[in-house]
Amino acid sequence: MPRLRRRASTAAPCACVGRTLSVPDTTALRTAVRLRRLASARLPTPHGLFQMAVFAAGDDKEHVALWMGELESGMPLVRIHSECLTGDAFMSLRCDCGPQLQSALAQIAAEGRGAVLYLRQEGRGIGLANKIRAYALQDEGADTVEANHQLGLPADARDFGIAVAMLEALKVRRLRLMTNNPRKLDELRRAGFEVVERVPIQIVANPFNAAYLETKARKMGHLLDPDA
Image 1 (cartoon, rainbow, N blue to C red):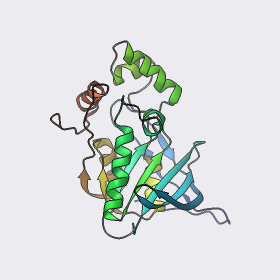
Image 2: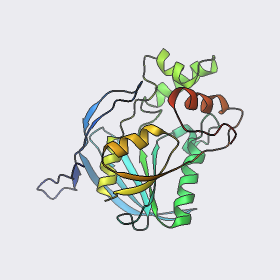
Image 3: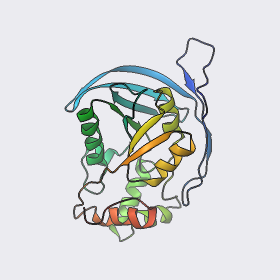
């Protein structure tokens, strides 16, 4: 497990983690994540009082960790959540992102311990404008994977090396991961974390996202219960 590397200066601590992605139809990258903690404060939410920290990771984006309780010991719940403006902020029914985020925060609050890592990797890493272009192609009949391919983009372009570095910065070693995505499990385990349990975070489908969820299960390997 790579250790946090700290620069000898008065700047915030820096974590450097090398990652190689080998999942089919993802962007194959080797990254060195230089993580800097930029700011911290308390954040009251409808679910309870969280601590919030903003991190820079050398990708011109500001990533966020929300957590409550003691993370270093035990097996805290952890959700790695990729930014989804349409779902998280505008409550779009085309995806399950917004309800998943709120469910994760509620489950963490109920246990009194856990973290949400909010990665600024909109549209599974392709960016907001490309995601909206993909939506337009889906309106014409393409599924979420086909739409990305028609744009010349991978189905999933995210780099979870940022999440690895954030977990190290929060001193998390053992965790229960809230996810339906086996790739996230694989990435954390390859990085040396002990993922003791996968906690499903499935949302009831609606007429606007049922085909999207079916595609994620069939083409991207997401662990979804078709009867849920």
